[in-house]
Length: 309
Ligand SMILES: O=C(O)CCC(=O)C(=O)O
Ligand SMILES: [Fe+2]
Image (cartoon, rainbow, N blue to C red):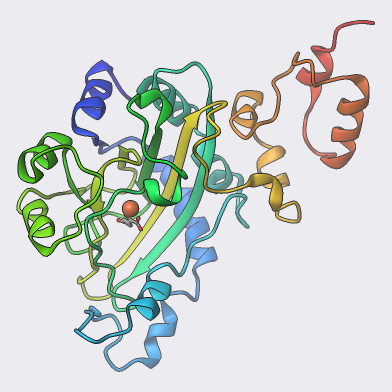
């Protein structure tokens, strides 16, 4: 186990949990290799720019929408055009176990998985403090943690203070400086108050932060010359929680799902909504048709669990 009861307690109390060495070096290395291929040219566009590799900082009057588009460049969504390492890391059994433990539920669903490659100079990555619920639910975060989400971010490169470390404020600190638990901070005074309590997620490659849709945080700029930050954002919710969503896996039927299907265990696939072996969905008909759709997927346990008729 890569976490303990204290970690779970801390996540509930603070809203944030950081585990510096969550992924081992030999788990990080092949995923980093995938990023190097996926984003081979992503940092290079900067070379035509005379101040390449120098921090870009928004000035008053700059186009916020244009910067936002640059900030959110270099994001890909599961399934990835890469090895099984990048395709399975968001379904790592220890990540699933941690999501279950934090939410306190027996079965979880992966509702978000994307990469993000940031480069010094490509955008001004500084953000205001915000909570993420706005694009994860049409309501607001539940009073009950089990009905919220676990949002992980983990890093494939070392993250220092000037390489885009996520800034965050713990729930008790938010309550102290803003008067009560809040989901927004719309005035400059509120932003400044939060900034006075901010901490930074400074972790080596393999480090992980867990938070949720109701936590105050912000992206920060990359100012280290020629710096880069490779990360993955991975969200889980309780299985069956229809309030929360982000990606729709089924809508991307032409994407390379075989990179996931052919390598994942039944427990991992269950996090994507694929019924476990023995589920009543599986009949000889659905088994055979699904197998013909994904010929390389080893469906032996699914066939084996079919009750003899
Ligand atoms: O990338 C980061 O460190 C944070 C970004 C963020 O919070 C967001 O875009 O919602
Ligand atoms: Fe955010």
